Amino acid sequence: MGTGTEEPSSSGGGSASRARGLAVKALVLLGGALLLKWLRKSTTRWDHARAVADSLIGEKFSREQARRDPAGYFNMRTLTCPATEMVDGSRVLYFEQAFWRTHQKPFRQRFYMVKPCPKEMKCDVQLSSYAIRDVEEYKNFCDRPKDQRPQPEEVIGDIIEHLTTVHLSRCERGKRCLYEGSTPPSSYPNSWNGASYCTSELIVHKNGEVHTWDRGYDDEGNQVWGPKAGPYEFKPATPPSSYDYMFSPLNLPSVLALEKTCFHL
Image (tube, rainbow, N blue to C red; front, side):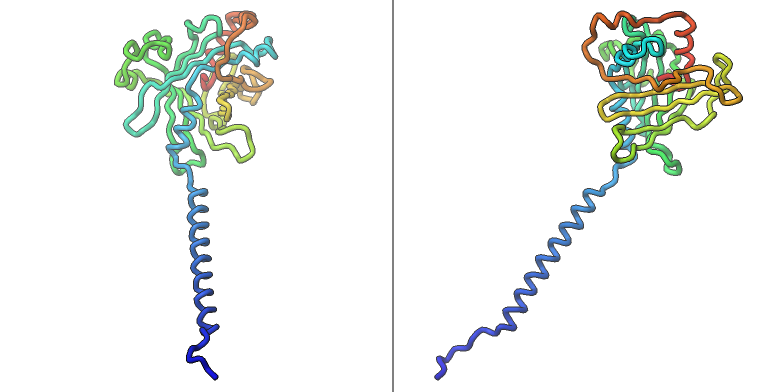
């Protein structure tokens, strides 16, 4: 005999369960798609430029390289700091280079302008070097209090001759570098020591190192100046030792050769 009640329909329960399962699956797929989109979010052109500028800023030395090969490399100090920003967002950095124990007397001073590569070019960052109108006015710029430096509007007026441009690209996954690049082949004339043109390669590493390799070539493609064993390796500043005093200019022609390099880093 019946009790007057009916058993729940098994088909109705199954439909509800399937609906809930589909809803959960849809939410999982949507969340995964959003996460994947976030992970794949591309770095903007200006993010690349800022990363390169930030990596160049600071005090760096070729001390370790000079210890390994004192006949081939000098112990030098480079110092780079922000100078101003252009209306288009390009960052202007001041750079100077000197021998370690006479770092108050830089033998090379430059402005760097860092900005994204033009969209039509296959690179990420364009790094250009410029001459300074009055280098004496900028000597030890980074070491001075900001109110004793040339002001941003003065800096813009003191950017004069364009020297070279290096085009940098983000390093491939798995490499220890962040960005690497060079000047276009044989695009910068140079007459130092019998050269007809010069090239410059630049590598920015994840640990703050900057490697630069400037070389001059004659009409036949023979290298006539610049290191042959490899680039200069400038590493972030560490406490110096008395051993560093061993590495100083050996002779005037060598010092002049350093000043005549291509990219001047």
